[in-house]
Image (cartoon, rainbow, N blue to C red; front, side, top):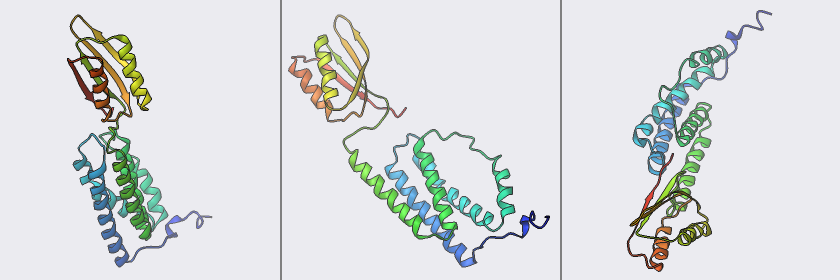
Length: 224
Protein backbone atom coordinates (compact mmCIF):
# COMPACT_ATOMS: atom_id res chain seq x y z
CA UNK A 1 0.00 0.00 0.00
CA UNK A 2 2.82 2.39 0.87
CA UNK A 3 4.34 1.78 -2.56
CA UNK A 4 1.10 2.79 -4.24
CA UNK A 5 1.09 6.06 -2.31
CA UNK A 6 4.75 6.78 -3.03
CA UNK A 7 4.45 9.40 -5.78
CA UNK A 8 8.15 10.23 -5.67
CA UNK A 9 8.92 7.35 -8.00
CA UNK A 10 6.45 8.52 -10.64
CA UNK A 11 8.10 10.58 -13.37
CA UNK A 12 6.82 12.00 -16.60
CA UNK A 13 8.80 12.57 -19.79
CA UNK A 14 11.56 15.11 -19.34
CA UNK A 15 13.14 17.47 -21.86
CA UNK A 16 16.64 17.15 -23.17
CA UNK A 17 18.90 20.20 -23.06
CA UNK A 18 18.40 20.84 -26.76
CA UNK A 19 14.59 20.67 -26.41
CA UNK A 20 14.77 23.00 -23.44
CA UNK A 21 16.86 25.56 -25.35
CA UNK A 22 14.60 25.37 -28.40
CA UNK A 23 11.51 25.85 -26.25
CA UNK A 24 13.12 28.66 -24.25
CA UNK A 25 14.09 30.53 -27.42
CA UNK A 26 10.71 29.97 -29.05
CA UNK A 27 8.66 31.17 -26.08
CA UNK A 28 10.72 34.37 -25.86
CA UNK A 29 10.25 34.97 -29.60
CA UNK A 30 6.49 34.33 -29.42
CA UNK A 31 6.04 36.55 -26.38
CA UNK A 32 7.88 39.39 -28.14
CA UNK A 33 5.58 38.94 -31.15
CA UNK A 34 2.55 39.07 -28.86
CA UNK A 35 4.01 42.18 -27.22
CA UNK A 36 4.13 43.98 -30.58
CA UNK A 37 0.57 42.89 -31.38
CA UNK A 38 -0.67 44.11 -27.99
CA UNK A 39 1.05 47.49 -28.24
CA UNK A 40 -0.22 48.07 -31.78
CA UNK A 41 -3.81 46.90 -31.51
CA UNK A 42 -4.76 47.08 -27.83
CA UNK A 43 -7.54 49.43 -26.69
CA UNK A 44 -6.24 49.36 -23.14
CA UNK A 45 -6.42 52.61 -21.19
CA UNK A 46 -3.49 51.64 -18.98
CA UNK A 47 0.12 52.13 -20.07
CA UNK A 48 0.41 49.46 -22.74
CA UNK A 49 4.19 49.57 -22.93
CA UNK A 50 4.63 48.82 -19.23
CA UNK A 51 2.23 45.86 -19.39
CA UNK A 52 3.75 44.54 -22.62
CA UNK A 53 7.30 44.71 -21.23
CA UNK A 54 6.54 41.92 -18.75
CA UNK A 55 5.17 39.53 -21.40
CA UNK A 56 8.52 37.74 -21.99
CA UNK A 57 9.19 37.41 -18.25
CA UNK A 58 5.69 36.08 -17.59
CA UNK A 59 5.79 33.53 -20.41
CA UNK A 60 9.29 32.30 -19.50
CA UNK A 61 8.17 31.87 -15.88
CA UNK A 62 5.18 29.76 -16.90
CA UNK A 63 7.39 27.77 -19.29
CA UNK A 64 9.91 26.94 -16.56
CA UNK A 65 7.14 26.05 -14.10
CA UNK A 66 5.56 23.59 -16.55
CA UNK A 67 8.97 22.12 -17.47
CA UNK A 68 9.65 21.58 -13.76
CA UNK A 69 6.36 20.14 -12.61
CA UNK A 70 5.86 17.81 -15.54
CA UNK A 71 8.88 15.78 -14.40
CA UNK A 72 7.35 14.98 -11.01
CA UNK A 73 3.83 14.72 -9.62
CA UNK A 74 5.23 15.56 -6.17
CA UNK A 75 6.57 18.86 -7.45
CA UNK A 76 3.28 19.66 -9.16
CA UNK A 77 1.32 19.05 -5.97
CA UNK A 78 3.76 21.08 -3.91
CA UNK A 79 3.65 23.94 -6.42
CA UNK A 80 -0.12 24.27 -6.02
CA UNK A 81 0.39 25.15 -2.37
CA UNK A 82 3.33 27.44 -3.08
CA UNK A 83 1.50 29.41 -5.78
CA UNK A 84 -1.61 29.78 -3.63
CA UNK A 85 0.18 32.45 -1.57
CA UNK A 86 1.20 34.43 -4.66
CA UNK A 87 -1.19 37.01 -6.07
CA UNK A 88 -1.09 40.29 -7.98
CA UNK A 89 -0.84 43.24 -5.62
CA UNK A 90 -2.29 45.47 -8.35
CA UNK A 91 -5.60 44.27 -9.74
CA UNK A 92 -5.89 43.72 -13.48
CA UNK A 93 -8.88 45.91 -14.27
CA UNK A 94 -9.24 45.37 -18.00
CA UNK A 95 -10.52 42.14 -19.50
CA UNK A 96 -8.22 42.56 -22.50
CA UNK A 97 -5.14 42.30 -20.29
CA UNK A 98 -6.43 39.09 -18.70
CA UNK A 99 -7.00 37.59 -22.15
CA UNK A 100 -3.43 38.38 -23.21
CA UNK A 101 -2.03 36.82 -20.04
CA UNK A 102 -4.13 33.72 -20.73
CA UNK A 103 -2.70 33.63 -24.26
CA UNK A 104 0.82 33.83 -22.83
CA UNK A 105 0.01 31.01 -20.44
CA UNK A 106 -1.30 28.87 -23.27
CA UNK A 107 1.78 29.57 -25.38
CA UNK A 108 4.13 28.65 -22.53
CA UNK A 109 2.30 25.41 -21.72
CA UNK A 110 2.16 24.36 -25.36
CA UNK A 111 5.87 25.03 -25.91
CA UNK A 112 6.75 23.21 -22.68
CA UNK A 113 4.79 20.23 -24.01
CA UNK A 114 6.96 20.32 -27.18
CA UNK A 115 4.00 21.34 -29.35
CA UNK A 116 5.75 24.00 -31.39
CA UNK A 117 3.28 24.36 -34.27
CA UNK A 118 0.18 25.24 -32.24
CA UNK A 119 1.72 28.30 -30.47
CA UNK A 120 2.86 29.71 -33.83
CA UNK A 121 -0.63 29.18 -35.26
CA UNK A 122 -2.12 30.91 -32.20
CA UNK A 123 0.11 33.97 -32.66
CA UNK A 124 -0.86 34.18 -36.32
CA UNK A 125 -4.54 33.92 -35.37
CA UNK A 126 -4.22 36.67 -32.75
CA UNK A 127 -2.52 38.95 -35.30
CA UNK A 128 -5.07 38.30 -38.07
CA UNK A 129 -8.01 38.68 -35.65
CA UNK A 130 -6.72 41.99 -34.25
CA UNK A 131 -5.92 43.29 -37.72
CA UNK A 132 -9.46 42.43 -38.85
CA UNK A 133 -11.02 44.18 -35.84
CA UNK A 134 -8.78 47.19 -36.37
CA UNK A 135 -10.00 47.61 -39.95
CA UNK A 136 -13.60 47.02 -38.92
CA UNK A 137 -13.58 49.70 -36.24
CA UNK A 138 -11.65 52.28 -38.28
CA UNK A 139 -14.72 54.55 -38.38
CA UNK A 140 -16.19 53.56 -35.02
CA UNK A 141 -15.28 54.70 -31.54
CA UNK A 142 -15.72 51.82 -29.10
CA UNK A 143 -16.54 52.53 -25.49
CA UNK A 144 -19.26 51.77 -23.01
CA UNK A 145 -20.02 55.35 -22.03
CA UNK A 146 -19.93 57.84 -24.90
CA UNK A 147 -21.32 61.31 -24.46
CA UNK A 148 -22.40 63.83 -27.06
CA UNK A 149 -22.89 67.36 -25.77
CA UNK A 150 -24.85 69.79 -27.93
CA UNK A 151 -24.86 73.46 -26.96
CA UNK A 152 -27.22 75.72 -28.91
CA UNK A 153 -28.67 79.17 -28.50
CA UNK A 154 -32.21 77.80 -28.71
CA UNK A 155 -33.86 74.55 -29.84
CA UNK A 156 -37.37 73.17 -29.76
CA UNK A 157 -38.28 69.95 -28.00
CA UNK A 158 -39.44 68.35 -31.25
CA UNK A 159 -36.01 68.99 -32.75
CA UNK A 160 -34.36 67.23 -29.79
CA UNK A 161 -36.65 64.27 -30.42
CA UNK A 162 -35.66 64.40 -34.09
CA UNK A 163 -31.96 64.17 -33.16
CA UNK A 164 -32.69 61.14 -30.98
CA UNK A 165 -34.60 59.54 -33.85
CA UNK A 166 -31.75 60.30 -36.25
CA UNK A 167 -29.32 58.46 -33.99
CA UNK A 168 -31.65 55.52 -33.41
CA UNK A 169 -32.27 55.17 -37.15
CA UNK A 170 -28.50 54.75 -37.57
CA UNK A 171 -28.37 51.90 -35.03
CA UNK A 172 -26.88 54.06 -32.28
CA UNK A 173 -28.18 53.48 -28.76
CA UNK A 174 -29.02 56.84 -27.22
CA UNK A 175 -30.68 58.35 -24.18
CA UNK A 176 -30.87 61.92 -22.93
CA UNK A 177 -28.65 62.12 -19.86
CA UNK A 178 -29.29 65.77 -19.03
CA UNK A 179 -31.04 68.81 -20.46
CA UNK A 180 -30.30 72.33 -19.27
CA UNK A 181 -32.25 75.25 -20.68
CA UNK A 182 -31.93 78.92 -19.82
CA UNK A 183 -32.75 82.19 -21.54
CA UNK A 184 -29.81 82.30 -23.95
CA UNK A 185 -28.46 78.72 -24.10
CA UNK A 186 -29.57 75.09 -24.15
CA UNK A 187 -27.20 72.24 -23.31
CA UNK A 188 -28.21 68.65 -24.09
CA UNK A 189 -26.08 65.68 -23.02
CA UNK A 190 -26.73 62.40 -24.86
CA UNK A 191 -25.44 59.09 -23.55
CA UNK A 192 -24.46 56.86 -26.49
CA UNK A 193 -23.04 53.52 -27.50
CA UNK A 194 -21.91 52.25 -30.92
CA UNK A 195 -21.42 55.83 -32.01
CA UNK A 196 -19.79 56.57 -35.36
CA UNK A 197 -17.75 59.68 -35.89
CA UNK A 198 -19.37 60.32 -39.25
CA UNK A 199 -22.64 60.99 -37.38
CA UNK A 200 -21.21 64.27 -36.13
CA UNK A 201 -21.55 65.79 -39.60
CA UNK A 202 -25.09 64.42 -39.95
CA UNK A 203 -26.16 66.04 -36.68
CA UNK A 204 -24.43 69.25 -37.69
CA UNK A 205 -26.36 69.33 -41.00
CA UNK A 206 -29.61 68.70 -39.16
CA UNK A 207 -29.02 71.58 -36.75
CA UNK A 208 -28.13 73.93 -39.62
CA UNK A 209 -31.30 72.89 -41.44
CA UNK A 210 -33.26 74.24 -38.46
CA UNK A 211 -31.72 77.68 -39.03
CA UNK A 212 -29.66 77.43 -35.83
CA UNK A 213 -26.40 79.27 -36.43
CA UNK A 214 -24.90 79.36 -32.94
CA UNK A 215 -24.15 75.82 -31.77
CA UNK A 216 -21.33 73.63 -30.50
CA UNK A 217 -20.86 69.85 -30.63
CA UNK A 218 -18.59 67.97 -28.21
CA UNK A 219 -17.98 64.23 -28.13
CA UNK A 220 -16.48 62.38 -25.16
CA UNK A 221 -15.52 58.73 -25.11
CA UNK A 222 -14.75 56.68 -22.02
CA UNK A 223 -13.88 53.00 -21.52
CA UNK A 224 -15.50 52.87 -18.08
